[in-house]
Image 1: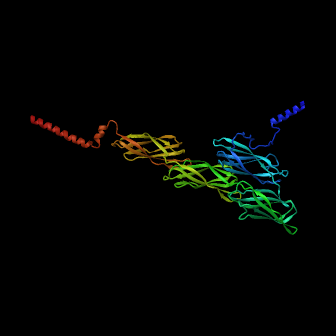
Image 2: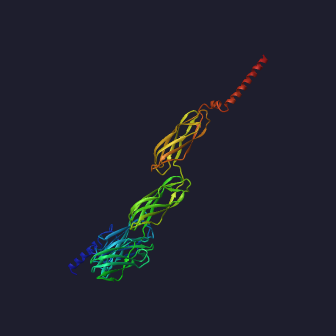
Image 3: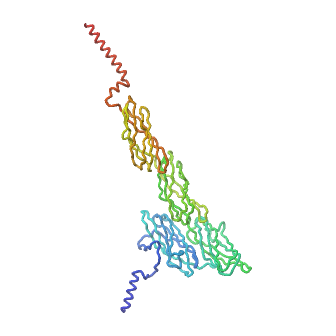
Length: 534
């Protein structure tokens, strides 16, 4: 081997190492989000590509449908991206496309559909494509899986002798009614009174109430493209794949009626529209108002115009302020927060409640539709007081005044504002100042309030009640009145006046009277004895 050969071999090895030359395959250009490396050979796949279906003709457009199964754990914010190897078969103007599939449960299958274009110079052969799946795990990290390789094979144009089908599209979804749109080109002479007939070859997709439908074209000149649409209803059991329809054209030319032979075309319906409800939280409590919040996601595959989340059932003794939450137009994969204000009566039971929601929306033809029920468990907590009260100083002497100090703590989960405290007492107590005010209390925050109190003189020592209630505002501006709290007030006798108090009230006066009589008697007896002795 001469020197020139060794140099050539060295250059080739160097180019292979740099990636300029690929051995045993192709090197795709472009990127999907970010270029992803192939997983290690020992890595366990989290997804399985179940089926691939396409109906794109050469020099035309069609659909590509992929069905994946999640063989791993539950994930969120999932997105399926695909990449074409070259310009011959691509996604419109780009070789990349992606679809959001939102939340994805374990063992659940998801189907995504893409619009595909095959150029006139595309060959009828297998083109290798790649798919990647990006998603968020339970711990919040962002992961990617793939590549998953599959083939797309363009078909010949469907030729009806002198007519060709150049475009096939549909917005038909499983369990719904949609539209099949076909574009045909007249490659022959001018014709008139053309009837384009379509017939379903399966039970899952029907043209209205039957399997047949037709569209009329009055004048159809040479090289003209004509677009026709058919109303189609898909059953709930349609899955990812291509469903056959036969198409034929009858027409009038030179005064005679002619009809083409029927040809088969494939229609790929989209999966059923679905929604999910996640991150449901509850502040509901027996005898109080609370909030149920969460996040609703359009799992696709289509956009849901004029969507509304409706609370259909929530059990007894639970009263929502509103049952509908407007979402607006919810794109496929989009998530929006929702929030319901709900009152729970005093007679309600604590514990979990089953709430049922549905999403009302419009399909692609503007017809009203409703999702399957979205069930979720909502917890109702036991009843509790809004405030916790602790006496810091609650005593008074008979015949005097005192300041009663109370420490109040916000026992609610919300910020409470404009807290107006009022106190009430009965005789022998009298309130000289019966009102206190606290501008704001955070949850678990405390403040000290005071009332001026006096007690009647001559009142026996003991414990007497003082009642306190609170009027306050919740975060949404609603004014509420709390339950009444009982505060014990200790009443004591004045210091140093125990004997006086004893003698001046109660049984003191009768006892003094008796003692006086006894003393007078004893004194009289002594005087009498002395008088006798003298």
